[in-house]
Image (cartoon, rainbow, N blue to C red; front, top):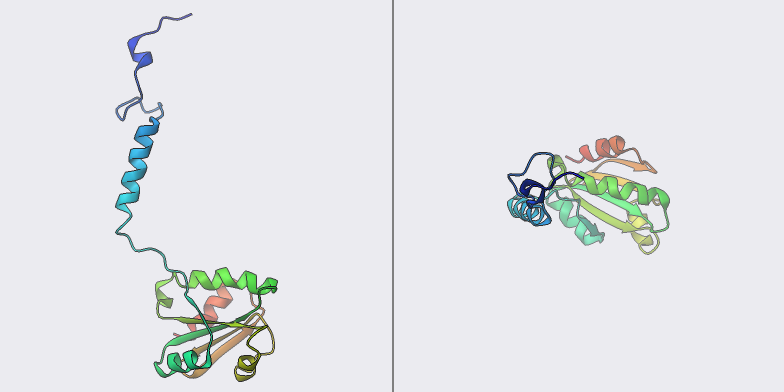
Length: 152
């Protein structure tokens, strides 16, 4: 057995040898510092899905906003794939003004007729009141992003 020295029993501190692990107290302090420093940073914004109403769409169109209408159903696997892709668009500064409306395929049948949509997983983009494009069943992020760009 080797001899124990004072240096072998010292507590871990910020000035410890680089290969030694910091104590839980040091880790908590560092975590608190990082958390405090990040408070002022802007958070990544996800797209805000607004429930569709004909009045809300008309108001956004009248205001000349870029608009994306997503027609989805909770049971639709393609819609479930599209949702996070659409959410990520909101984190992109290019799409900061994009108004995203969510039409429920099952409960908003009259709106489907108004929008001339026959299927869930349909995405329609407008620049003001002019339809710029639509897609049915698309799940490739770059294609969905390209479609959304047409509204800008």
